[in-house]
Image 1 (cartoon, rainbow, N blue to C red):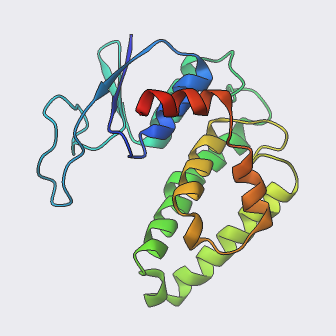
Image 2 (cartoon, rainbow, N blue to C red):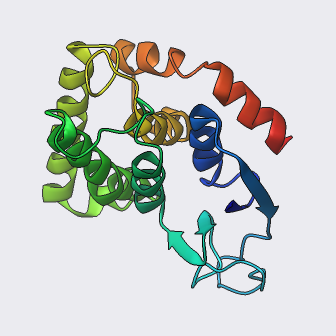
Length: 192
């Protein structure tokens, strides 16, 4: 049995969306998100810092959005949301997954907190990253071309949250319009 430790309004919502896309049988455990100073974490939440998401499965706990996305898509290999080992798209899938959690999300966070302006090299990296994403999306509706994957769930969630920070972009607007999916609506209804 899968259990998602979820805090409404947090980025664990994207894992809730992924679970709906996978049509996975999952128990949702709603927990309190900790305060900025780390206090107030819910003791039921197995995440080491009290954040969400955390996923429990067969006595194991997986934390961190990218790890959970990879874990779930590997757990459901027949779904097209992941890319199994041996598939020619696997390298691109893994690259985009880790690009999101290792570069895109941190840079968007830094931009949102006005930290990029303090570092010219990071500002250039941010601009190059956004050009790369826009160019990739220019080649197809999703980051892997015609195929919607868990990677798109992570990017769409982040970009919707940070849309005002990203500047005018018809490519991003068109990409985000494709986020309106039945599974996304089901996840939103569960969160409400």
